[in-house]
Image (tube, rainbow, N blue to C red):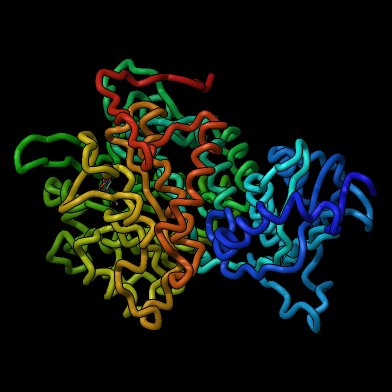
Amino acid sequence: PPHVRGYTFANMKFLILPMLIFVGSALADVPVIPLPQEVKPQEGVLELAGEVEVVLPPGGGSLVLPTLREVGLDVREGGDESRIRFVGASDLDGDRFGPAPVGEGYLLMVRPHGIRVYAAEASGHFYGLQTLAQLVEGAPRCEEGVVTLAAMDIRDEPRFGYRGFMLDESRHFSGMEAVKRLLDGMARLKMNRFHWHLTDSPGWRIEIKAFPKLTTVGGRGAETDVRDDAPAQYYTQDQIRGILAYAAARHIVVIPEIDMPGHADAAVKAYPEHGGGGYLQRGSTVKWPNFTFNPAREETLAFLDTILAEVAGLFPEAGIIHFGGDEVHFGWHHWPELPEVQALKEREGFTELAEVEAWFNRRMAGVINDLGFKTGGWDEITGRDLPIDKTVIYWWRHDRRDVLGRALERGYPVVLCPRRPAYFDFVQHDSHQVGRRWGGYNPLADVHVFPDCLGLDWEEASTVLGVQACLWTEVTVSQARRDFMTWPRLIAMAEAGWTNAGRKDFACFEERLRPWLGWLDSRGIGYFDPFEGSEEVTDEGVAVEYLDMPE
Ligand code: TNX
């Protein structure tokens, strides 16, 4: 067909120079992030021009045509003669092309006559599509409307099964549009877990039908807006279902977090009877007077059970319900005075508050497990005798390697998200004034070399599920600043989660990052420019914006 020309001697001369440049400099590192595990150059080039027909993957692949259109191809669904074909892995001729891809893996073959993407699962086809989209976007267009791709085989699969990002919605609320844009970026980067931190002291952001005041009262205000009459910001259950569908289409699992027994002020503001007292900051001032739930009161436990049951119904595919469990001892000072805690200690023979906390953890983890989910928890829960096969530990205290060691020794599945370098509320450049530091900060290069900077013995660390970046939002009031803190570091985290250690090279990453900044520009997503430098987005004097308000 005239719109697709193969590799002929006549048109070769126009291609030889760009091809040499492409093959010489870029084939080992195709313009794709995360860098694929294996790229093998083949003979010739493929030109795509005009209308291109596509065979969709077995499951349908609803985003195949839209994604290819987005990168400038004029595509439509076609028959067996189509130039681009998504094919089941079982159709691969193994004698000629080697083992079939499995799981999230794919084999992308670009040949002078067309493209095939083999995968065993829908997620594999989806990731092959993301790679193809980036190849097309980065391809030389020597002639108007003609996309020229060097022939190659890309055989790819992720290093880790868990490639996550956590967003704190409590301190400052992001809203539907920002979350969808984030999911778009994660999908393009082959990230597959969105950990949604929906509750914390400043605001409760998830509608619970049984307890409407959690959102109408507990959802008021933000970290930087503590007015009693501030508007409430939260996601309705319909909105949450919308986000879940959007994420599922992009092969992203959304993991909800309901933090307990600490970080509970917003819930206690709505239902004071469930409070267990406050948070003493620097020994004296009470910053969060209702930091905890009462860990031993029957009615409070039943209240939390009801919340968890609703969350389980709303997030049927989450696999994990995260129940926080962090920083409780910062705010448990009133527990000894609670009659229910006294009774529990007596009944169980506990002498320490830590035993009360552990009892609470086990009690709530049991409920989550009975609902059919694993319990996710911050690394404080490591010593609490929660079941190894039903618990996932999120290691965040970078200064507590001992805790990581203990979790791995016991055989817990672990998600690696240490403050350094995985917390994106830390600054990313030495010149930045606003944001956290802790014996240093989190520059792009540190994120990229993660988790190998930890020097883990991967045989001992075989239960590590993967990596996660976390954006805590105490000091990110505006979306512009949240973007600035997130990007481009999330791009480096995606490569950390996907690409094998031996394949990663920061200079090569930087080359591939340049076009990505254009992708962010095209979506109106802000970022810190690591090449040119860019002015720090500080939010100085910026007030909380109330967008997207539920009725
Ligand atoms: C610690 S990470 C917290 C968060 C804060 C964060 C700020 C964790 C489990 N708890 O509540 O937002 O530090 O960096």
